[in-house]
Image (cartoon, rainbow, N blue to C red; front, side, top):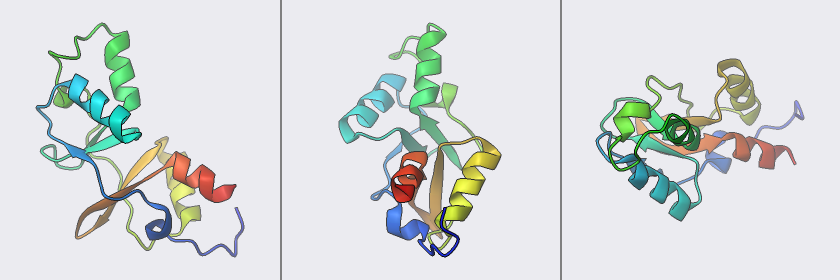
Length: 124
């Protein structure tokens, strides 16, 4: 990454932020991700949680019924977040350090999502 690059999260993050409740069926989470062409949703009733395509694929691989299982069953809790003014090089470093592909963007409240796809597109 260009060390002189001063691109901020706010310039590349996905908005509006897509959310889902913790008690929604996994099938609804999968449908929303597919319809909106996204790979993660912030869980509004989970307190700092997200559910990702990987979480849902893991549930399917484990034989879970997507109509019976709910988001709470597979969501990732206590996720790291970033602020809109953070530099993209710092986002890339955080994703690598924490082994994650999505970071919710918080500025008093959740305002967007930055993904590894956003980082890759920014680098190209």
